[in-house]
Figure 1: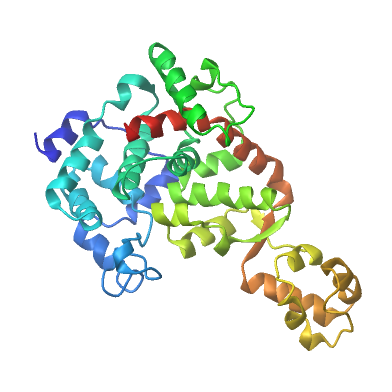
Figure 2: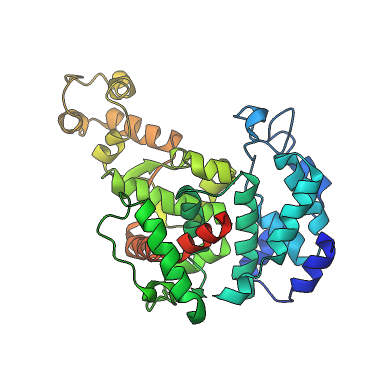
Length: 353
C-alpha cells in the first residue's frame, strides 16, 4: 500500500485551535515551497540543514513538525517523503519510514484526541529521521513536546507497559535512583491544569517552542539563577530535533511569561568572571576585578552608567527571568511535564523496539 493510501485510511477530520490554525496558515503548501522558504536561513549548500553545522551532520534548519502535521492533515504524505529522504538518504527508506509512522496503530493502546495523535506521529517521525531511538534523550523531547496533551496508556496495556518501564529503569538505574514505578502513572494525571494560562499557551505553539520553554526553566532551576539567556538554552538534543532559535526566542519573549531581569546580581551571574570587568570598564567604577560578583555589584549598583551597562548587556544577550505574575503557572506547567515522563518513556521504548 502506498504512503498516500495509508494516510487516507487512518486520517480523520477535525478542527485545530484558532492560534494553531494561524500558525498553519503560514506554513508552505509543498515541499518545494518549504525548501525555498529556508533559502538564506539554512545552510548555503542545503537550505534544509542548519547553517551553523556541517552539511554532513544533516542538522535540521528548523522545526519541521508543524509542516509535517499540515501535510499529513491535508493528505500529502508524498511531500513528507521528499523531506525525510533528504535526511536519511534513500527515497525507498524514506517512504517506508513515513508509511510506518502513519500505519503504527498508536490509537490501539493509547487514549487521546486527534491533535495528540497528529503531534505524536510528527514527533516520532522527526526523531526517527535522526537515527535509532535509544536512551533518554528522545524521551525528553517526547515529554516536553507532548505533555500538554491529555493522553494515557489504555488500561488493558498497562501491565505490559509497567514491565517495560521496570526493565528500562533497571537499565538506567542511576537516573532513576529512588523512583518506584506504579501503574497509576500510565493513566490520566489527576491534576490536569486546564485553568493554567501558561499551559493553554503551550498547547498552541510548535513542539520545539514547548521544549525550549521547559529547557529554559530546567536550566534556571538547575543552575540556581533566576536569569538566563534564551539563546543559550537550546541544547544539542533540541537542535538535533529541529528549532529555529531566533523564532523560538521571539515566541518566548512575546508570550508575557518572561521579562527582562531587574536584579543586577542576577545579570552579573550570567556574565563570566573574566567578562564582567570589561562590561563595567567604561563606568570608571573602582572595584577589585577578582572580587566575588556580589561584592562588585555592591560597589557599582549606585552608579547609573554601571546599571545601564549591565542592563544593556542583558538586552543584547536576551537575558530573561520568569515574569512574577506568571511564575507560579510556569513552574506548575514544568512540574506537570515531569509527571508525564513515564508515559513518554514507554512511547520511546516502543519506538526503539
